[in-house]
Amino acid sequence: MAGVRSCLTRQAKTRRAGLRGMNWKDEPATENQLGHLRRLGYDPDRPLTKGEAAQIISDFEASPADKARGAGSDDLELARLSAYRLRLSVELAWQAVEHGEGARLENPRHALEVALAERQEFWADTCSEADKMHLVSPQVAALHRQHGCHFAVPTAEQVQAILDSLDLAIPVWDRDHPELFYQTLELNFPELLRYHRLP
Image (cartoon, rainbow, N blue to C red; front, side, top):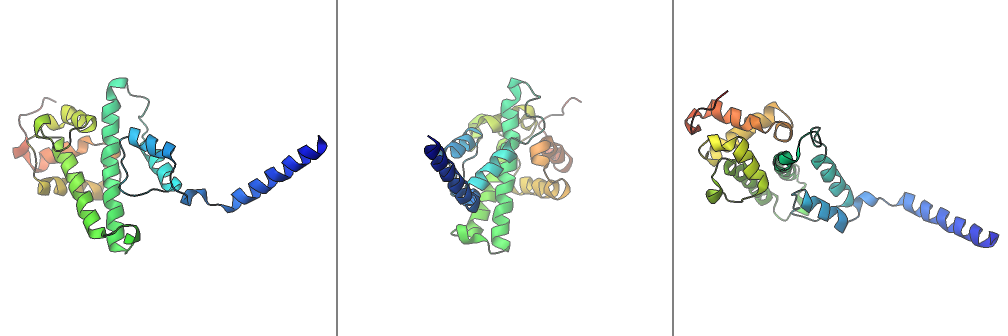
């Protein structure tokens, strides 16, 4: 029995020593991680590593108000995270274009154009009626009910102008304060206001 225990102890030490040398963060993301990301509303456009998936999950779950809100705000919370994910996609695509980090991307400029268009479409859709939305989702519908229903649909240029100004002014506005999009939209493009809101 002592020989078996000593053999098992040696095997465990060998395994631990081998694990220390491995960098698990660079391994492909697990199906469990990918499933969790899908449930959070994130659909990766490229293969992720375990480290990247862990970071994205952490970012999605990092919002300070996560559990303090009631069940009716789940869609709104997912909307915040979806908006933030779209911003991160644009930032990563910009980095790939600017710094030549497009090794993982076949065409970094095209990836940037797609990321920008998806983000613009997300915000424009929040001001659209459901039958005119490009992508109907609970997240977009939640922002529409809360804020976007007060506005006519802005153009892609108007949306991008708002996104650019907010991105420069406040680092994570879309995750923490998506209502700023609508406040800035009202200030800069008052003609889009369908009717005046009550204070």
